[in-house]
Image 1: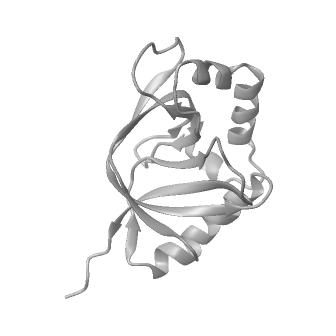
Image 2: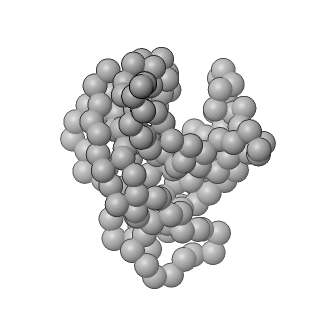
Length: 163
């Protein structure tokens, strides 16, 4: 599976966030997150984000799924450089870490689920990296002229070698 490892400093995102049930990510046919994207598009969220940010790459940012909680946060965001925080939006802090970056190749969101499936079945079992229990995200560059629908960025750390 093709990927790259990137080290990235911390950054902030201006985000419209909603809580989703933990089970929603593994339920066959569940469309809650795609429906959230559609609702945000229909209600002007992207316009609000563009007016309050300078970089218009779009992030689909996902908080960790925890056994201690029944829900996780998911947000649609753009990079935040300070200024007014519109009502109903938050600033999401993304910690500095190593990231494994995967291209989702396709014409629609179907390729995202397929890429996640490959990350869990191919990359994580066979690579020298473990996924951290922290924020991950999809990145939709404003300027995208390739067959890449988006990129998935997962926080990783090198596996400890057996002694």
